[in-house]
Image (cartoon, rainbow, N blue to C red; front, side, top):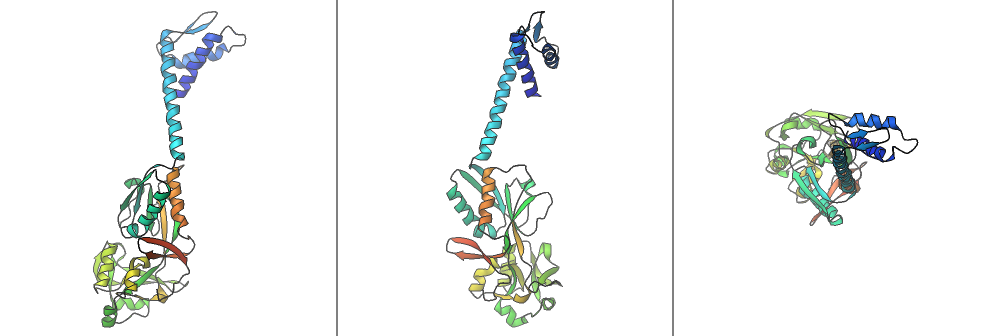
Length: 313
């Protein structure tokens, strides 16, 4: 509406100058005049010419200035979208954030010194529409509809227990054997676990236990403390396996791998810094293969591997 009024005012101003010129469209000028005038005379008309009144001149100058500011604001938005600078808020899982996201973010920031990133970590998923996160990184399927997502990779999951627990209670040979064992259970998934033998059909087993939590760290520590058998992403317990503190069990019947995904609110166009970050994270993993975290001093990377993985890692 503002732009239309400015164009109308501009047309009237031009008509006041060119009304003597043959071919001037006086019908158009009268139409524009009716659009603008609202109880205040903006244009004086004689048989020979149209001329803006003092009120009309002031109105034209104000609208022209406002329209110039609007065009400048639009240009600034376009420039901001094209510039690799600004603040990004990223949400991710509590354990995965420090071990994977932080090293990757450090590498990204080294490439783009004008970008600022805030990393918000929590075990439970928060809808980015509610949290205000620009990008949410999660392991698992998208829990809410309406989000745009990109798969970054697949994460291997395993069942595990301590050597002492297995010595005292026996080593399960099949998923069904878990019914005879204590399991440490996530509050949101405490009744059933799913396993798959190679690429075969899924087997769902009912599990029980005496310890439940919504904290991944607490669940893994409960297994280390001997409270039972747990299921976790392999990258979470790799160090424990290498130290001999826990053992992977049921390697032939591993739980299905879970997708590692980047999610963000639907939008027509992402800022360049957001798109580059998502592309950067995707370049560090392979979306069609299972990936496992390979840790080194001060760093972490995702490497593509075949699935199922060897049992000795």
